[in-house]
Length: 247
Length: 247
Image 1 (cartoon, chains in turn purple, orange):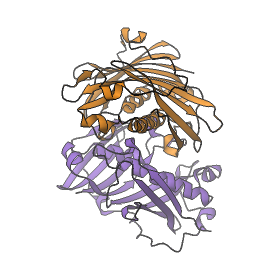
Image 2 (image 1 turned 60 degrees about the vertical axis):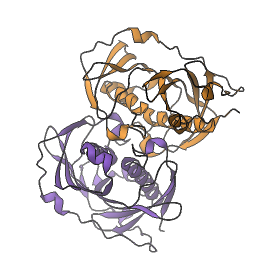
Image 3 (image 1 turned 180 degrees about the horizontal axis):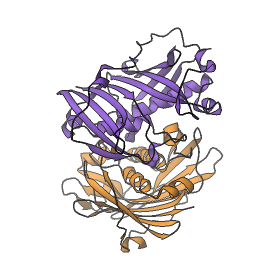
Image 4 (image 1 turned 45 degrees about the vertical axis):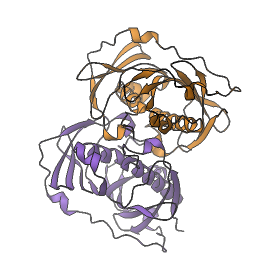
């Protein structure tokens, strides 16, 4: 059986940013919620995996914003798995307005880890054998190693943030959305006020835990393109690397 | 005409905390959203006031948590104005489970400020004359000056936080919920892990702005009662004072 998850979200005031438009963290939370519901239908939800000693880990996330919805608008988030491989499962998201205008789309790549070993394992059979929906236009898979990950982020201007209690979920994992929020909030003031995020490409590298201290820095490739790095303050280990494009 | 606002919220994963229960910031955001919808019905919404050169400011908020709902549960948030006075308007919230169990209730006190003068004004007539619903059991008004505001918070252990882009709303005001989130996240680790908030009483004293730096500190009155202070790092002005009780 294949499952396509569709959820309608009516945008609440606090889900919009200072421009009155849907905030990126709120959108990513919607996507995460809909993905969670979709994996439950497939019998591969967080609890299904936990019972077998496994957990999901997001490895790659690529978002394109085509048009930002505003307060009060209803949006549809549609998500489904697209490709299942030996080590990775890919998932697409489409975000539509009432009139079917494509507002945003996203691609993501997930892996399974063993909770005991804290390391990646091949996709267990009960996941490997799932059937992605056939009647959808899948987006191309994200590359596992995006080009920007090879270029060090060297800016000496850092912002510091502490992983907070409300950043962690029931499995004590830091919500992936928190990282993106921190990365965006560390952007230059004028960018946030006068530009909007057009594209975001993220690679998740290492876990962080509550209440770790993290450092955030960014290099500008040009006026509208940035490479971001969040690292553990104590160990300097990469937590995430990302590239953003603005308009 | 009187209006009672009732909204149903189905709890999403990211609206729950590490214990799998509704997070206080999420609940307060629901309350704020429902209050916004209620004031729109009364013709005294944020935009109605802005057009006349006014704004709402939350001055007092008192929350009691009776029972925490969990992920997937549907809750009803009911809110309405209770008393209108020369300078203040009072609003109650009730949060009910599907079977009408009272999960939480809250009282709040609001004032109107002039956007030009940035100071409090008497309630304009178009607000003063509104009719609160008659067929409700109003909670007693919150005192304007709670006893804890007279006791200085002296702890030298401070946590620092920067007002972030996603903490401000379309009117460039810091979301009141952000303050409460920071105050809770600054609590001792063990309290967050092993206790739950039973009561929270807040007085909002001075505005803060993006990207101000704030300092958060707390004194314990006993093992389960704390007094909190958030202040401007630069000026040491009080931003909020609060008392929390835990169980």
